[in-house]
Length: 330
Image 1 (tube, helix red, strand yellow):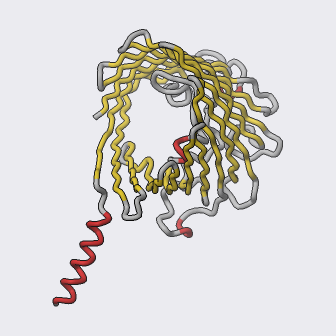
Image 2: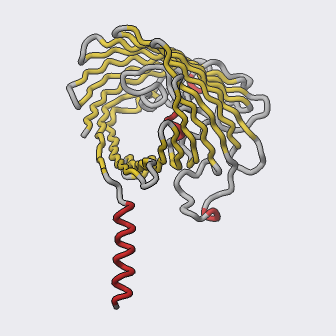
Image 3: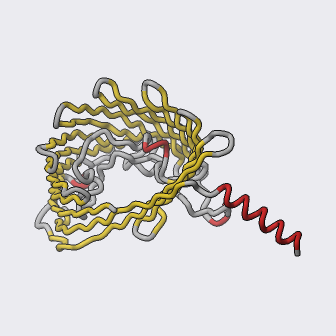
């Protein structure tokens, strides 16, 4: 009995010593009211007005290890599902981590174009645009990564041993389909107000046939006074749609945008996006998004209008949508 009690006490002591010294809980509730058309070449059908919700709860904590390193743990719930999770080991300016949807602080799918609320791909309310600034990346996958900060910015390196199965294997490789791997490297820095972002990703398609697609992301942003402007180009080689392998194919997403802070509470933004693919018979898809936001201090209200022409690369397939959004952080 004494031996059992001693063993239990030792185990409890070990667990206690490894517990996080600090735990933070934060989150947000987002409510949307929107209406959009079904893009078409002729008469358009309105998809109807809908109310939507998005819930986010984030847990984070950290402690200092006996060797002087710092450890940080994060876990997030998005609409009751784990959206991202990670464990970071930090020593000075160097961080080694394992996580889902982390990828070096988002360098491989980072965005240089400023927005008031959502980017085009997230705020088009049912238009289903093809434009996206993160096609062909591994930002949603389980990765092992390295982040190195220095005087000129940050360099990030991430490796995904299996793409397309984020957070599902649970130490059971046989429990998920066999897929390829992915590697990403990125850089971000700011020089006299000029933000620079560059990354490259090599990603196998979701199989073991070694058919690779590569994504190159380059962006610039600049802030002067109440105005922030940005431009970005994201190119995926050996793919026509930015996802599936096609030898010699190319998919390109180009975007420019600006945000004007009219006051401490009111901001106005515009984003223009173009999606190009070298598939026969396809034309360029053009999308414009206009957003007005009002910050109530903790809660934000935005109105976003989006217009798409040649949706999906089909000539004359046009549509419009509008979305009202209330977001309350806690």
